[in-house]
Image 1 (cartoon, rainbow, N blue to C red):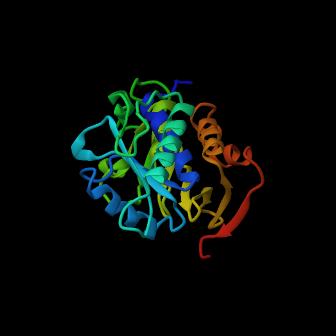
Image 2 (image 1 turned 90 degrees about the vertical axis):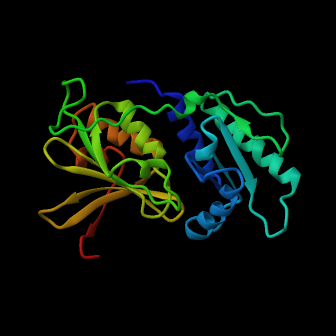
Image 3 (image 1 turned 90 degrees about the horizontal axis):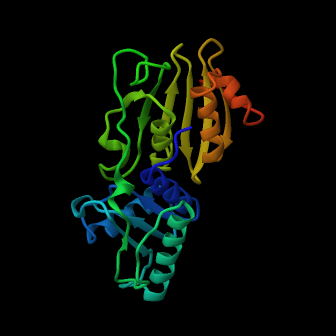
Length: 254
């Protein structure tokens, strides 16, 4: 299995922060000033219980992370903001990144630009990997967020040629209600991952003949294992999902 890039480590850290109540976004906003304003919209739309936020800014280029706490006061409490900064730094270090930060709430958290060097998403007319080897998974997605960053910058589909690419897409997808990824095998069966309120990840296999979905709710790590079984072991989507635990069934008309 291909090892994670720093970019994948950043996305993994951000997903851990999302799960902990801190809205974490890549390619977000156009500067340090407008990021918090959009983040309040993200909280209202997707995460009403969020405590704080962290993001980078498109026009500042890669390397800086800005963060803050949500408050009804005119200004953030410096101690609370610094505590959030420490939480972000710890999440980054847990994933193997080496952030630079002096502990001041007035100081952005710095990372090397490698944390924004994503593997390319390969596109092709056939269903083969970029190296001409193992048949690739086709991916369709919709990344729900209030700006135009993240996966929104890509078109809605592409060829996924190796585990490094599909893992980066999996962890980079914004965990906002309605965001989804669909991995389609060379025989045109699908494994779908859909973020619900919470955020909570629903993983399902559509059954067109029976007009039902077979589904369960998984952690991101468990979903990664299911997609790996699909991509690396060649398991059918339903077999890959059954390996993650018991399934429920829902009619297409529900």
